[in-house]
Image (tube, rainbow, N blue to C red):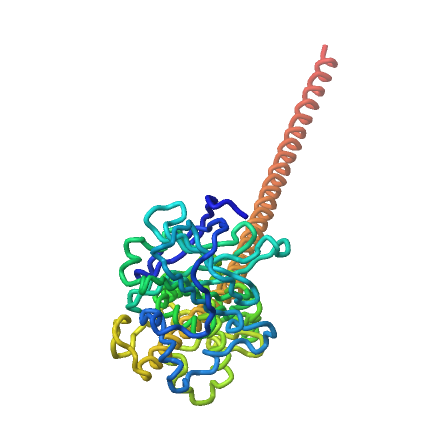
Length: 497
């Protein structure tokens, strides 16, 4: 067994305040055992049905959803286990909690996703004072095959008699031999435990565990339907922030291109002069290439919201496929928001831009991601929301928004990818080729000017040499004539007496 004092770094998120962050710590396994009883269950107990987190009871009794089928179904092409098969709940009731003197308690072992787990609790805190410490642990981790790992998202809750005050914490972690337990040293202050958390000297701890099957090639469904609906009520704002930041980042880049009048005019001229078949080739990309890049860009196994982002992107992909297949038919009234422009279609295994690149770039740069407008009705999530219709409407609103965020993010990702990796590359190549041609022309002109200059210089030198020869010739002639005259004179002098 590992030493109790061992400490590992981790990450968790506290639900005391929606969207707030906290820190979690891995803890070494201890040898203690709990004196409470553990029991697994597929439904949430009434005392733990915190309205802030779940509408399980309402949803179970609600009328069937008219939502598009891809909201609640998983990938039919994937033969492996689905998220619903890898999800489970566990309830642990610790009796006579006030009489516990042991440093740590361990729940019964429960199985989720084919793996065995248990909860470890430190009533007086693990290496901290005045706090209740809670951890999720892999059972018999030292007996597993070398190199094992379990990737899971889990929620641990300490139940309050007032469901609205129940304490929840979520985190995402890859369990392995070195980090076989994960949770929170400071889950909650001990002084707050007596404030409605202990009823008849019983402390109730509930866990939800979702084992995740990753897929690096395309967005994948991470969460069981009900677990996703519970988490999305808490993290929808966070997911929207992630998607909105990405969209705005791309919009800003495109906006700078359009605001640069010289460059935009040059780009428009380049695109307008291009042959239609070349435009079509640059306006499409294999879905495998795009989806793999999307997973790499958005999935972070250390961020608790990554699973919801993946689910949003998964639903967005399904929505694009659905709308591409039915684009000529009347859209279902509860389908994703159709007021936003359609950027891409899916044709077999290829993403294809729905319109001309210039039109789509201008629209993407000028039309921001629509703000999230909540439906009318009680908006405070801690208020009474027990009506079946209200619950169903809010679930569908959240699912619709999650899908719309995923769809719009994928569309902008495809547009940005095609522009950066295809269109802009072709534009830069065309500009480089044009500059090269201009440079060649300049060099040819300079070479021709050099040739002409050399020809003129040679002609001038030739003329100069010719003139010099004439001068020399005349000089020689002149010199030869003078010498003869002297000879004659000298001759004449000789004959004179």
